Image 1 (tube, rainbow, N blue to C red):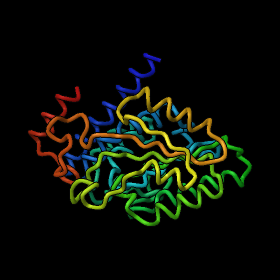
Image 2: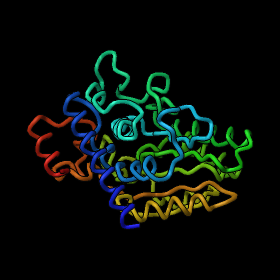
Image 3: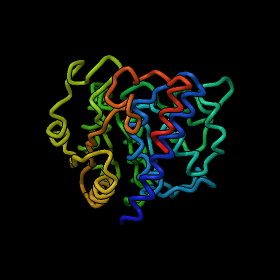
Image 4: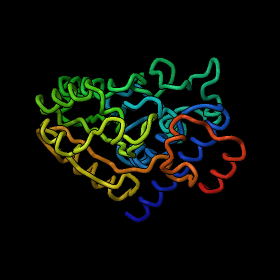
Length: 273
């Protein structure tokens, strides 16, 4: 287990380095919520999910939906690290003609399961995928993972999807909430308080797990518990730090949607070495 955790921690560091580098090159984008999700995404892409970068549309694959689509850099970094496309292409982020735009495009980039960006819609799409896999007779062999933002769960469509998933007992669906408590306008609990989250999701007939979203061991155990849970969907509420891994970005709302300057890129990469 220690070797696995060390491997996944290094993958998360690599993802964070890619995020900083590509945003610095682009001069725009969303570092805070991308960095906070890196450990979660590392576990999903490099341990949990059944994937084949050589055959992105393999029917037996698991699905990942980045519901908070503005955090596209964390998804792009993971896909490049996994081998879906050359890592050099990360430097084309947000440039004209690039496959790597500010929000993921499933029609252009292999490995992207859903075009997201309009907040609140990703969980509905993930639910539809999970129901479809169940109708196809997958019997839980293929799973769907949806990464949500905490500001995003202020959206009504999230709760419509939550109600439907609980009602239909969609146990091959796991939502993971990146709970860093900061959104573009400030602290989530000031803008529109979403607490108590665990109670809300339980009321919608979800299995709820609460963890430290930067502890690889806790993430691994939570996903194992989700996979073993039958008869209801699971949500993993992961407490995280916005901008995690870069000291001057951590817990700073100003880094929600601002790219680092060259000297800040240099400092950040030193910290992530």
